[in-house]
Length: 364
Image (cartoon, rainbow, N blue to C red; front, side):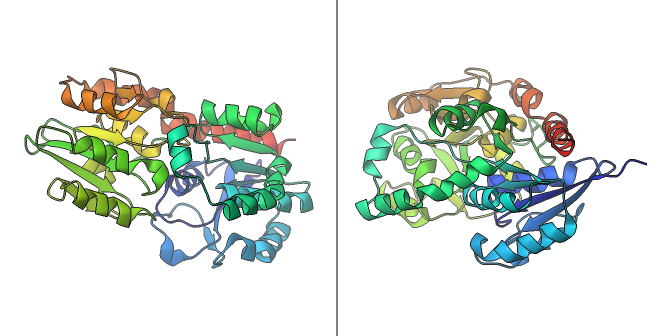
């Protein structure tokens, strides 16, 4: 009988987030007859927001990725996995340097960042000179990426940035999209319980996610609505302050975290995205998977690979166009919306691509 391929998935923590959701889902859905999978979490079990029941999970209980160096070295030496897959930039850089100590192990980093190109946003959020100097001094650490065997890109935009801007050799780059997880089923006509127009955004609350420009648009609508914001983050207080300033307190529902995201998406009429850049937005794919269309600003990071204008939503260039779309009447086909993402991001297709990559690397 052929032995299983030993694979490690490594993540900083299992707090609520897109990378955490994808890593926990893919690691649990690889074929158990072919792969021996372990999920290693740098952080703590108490922070876990995901149900991990199909595979062993090892918590290192470290506050920071750097503090896990000796523990990871020990585990890799003892367990000798064939392939290690990490996610999130600072951990990928870290694993790149660790890979120099283990030439017989293949290291894969799942990249998560696409650069913002919006000039106005970049000008308004320019970092102080001290931080810019500090970033330049730390830049050599980023070379750790170059030591990885493969860098996984979530979208074509991400692939192109890594190839042309970061100068990563093409043979080290591979595109694998994010999968739709098991909890998202097509909504029914009975899902909507009232006539009030319902909008929703599910995202970390940071400047990059663009909650503020969504709120600015909503404040100009001339009909009643409910806008649900699900997520937490460093910009939460500023976003809540803006809600009060715009007089939207009675129209906005704020939920820091919930396990009922599929239910909230299904009960909504339109998913609103304000992001200035994305990797490949899970929440946008998930919204379409339940039959809820999306409205987003045109931005780098796979949005144009998900949204098909007039089929499952719209991409617009500015706040005026955003408002115009919200004021128009549209007839949406929920089955067509769901099919538009399922044919590209279904679990079987995406997990199969991970399995093919692991098998290919394990034979090199």
